[in-house]
Image 1: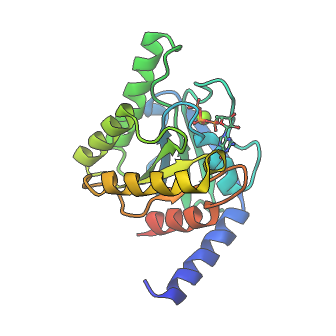
Image 2: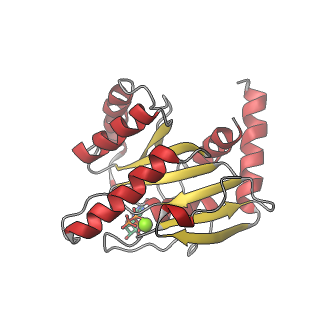
Image 3: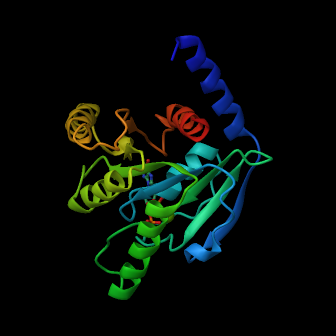
Length: 214
Ligand SMILES: Nc1nc2c(ncn2[C@@H]2O[C@H](COP(=O)(O)OP(=O)(O)OP(=O)(O)O)[C@@H](O)[C@H]2O)c(=O)[nH]1
Ligand SMILES: [Mg+2]
C-alpha cells in the first residue's frame, strides 16, 4: 500500500475507534452468538496476557471489557460493536490454560474458544496475544497450529511492552518473527503493544480496520 493510502486508513481507524463502541452481548456457548453479519476480530491468548486490557486501550475506554489480576476473568465470548451501524465486532475471549481453574471449566473454555476460532465465517483475523515477559509458550504454538490448519489468519501481538527493557523487547520481536514465518496463517506483521502507555495501539487499530475490510 502507498504511504498516502496508509495514512488515510490510519485516520479512518482513529476516527472509527473514537466513535460509538458498545458492548453487544456475552455468549457462553456458540448458539448465543449474534448473526454473522459484521466482520469479527478476536482476541486470543493465555489467561492474564492482557486481552481485555488491550481491547480497552484500543477503544480508549477504561471499563468496556472487564480486566483483573486474577487469571480467568473473562469466561465467555464478549462481543463489542465498533461503529454505528457496526463496522467491526471485537470479540474478547476467555484465556487458555491456567493451572488453578477446575479441569472441566478449562475443557469447556477450550471447546468454546476452539469451536469459535475454527468455525466462525465472519472471523476476519485473530490477534494472538503473547506476554512480552514470557514469549511464545507451548499452548500458544498449539493455538497457532490450529489456526494454521483452519486457515484463519492471525497477528501475533507482544503485550505488556512496558514491562520489559527495549533491548529485550527487540530481541523477542526478532525471535517471534522468525517463528511466525514458519506458520502459514501467521501474518508477517507482529505488533508490540502496551495498554499502559498506549504504545503500538494506533498501529493495531489500523491493522484491525484493514483486516476487517479486506
Ligand atoms: N503493565 C501492564 N499491565 C498490563 C497490560 N495489559 C494488561 N495488564 C495487566 O495484566 C492483568 C491481566 O489483564 P487482563 O486484560 O485482564 O488479561 P486477560 O488476558 O483479559 O485475562 P483473562 O480474561 O483472565 O484471560 C491486569 O492486572 C492488567 O492490568 C500492559 O500493557 N501493561
Ligand atoms: Mg479478559
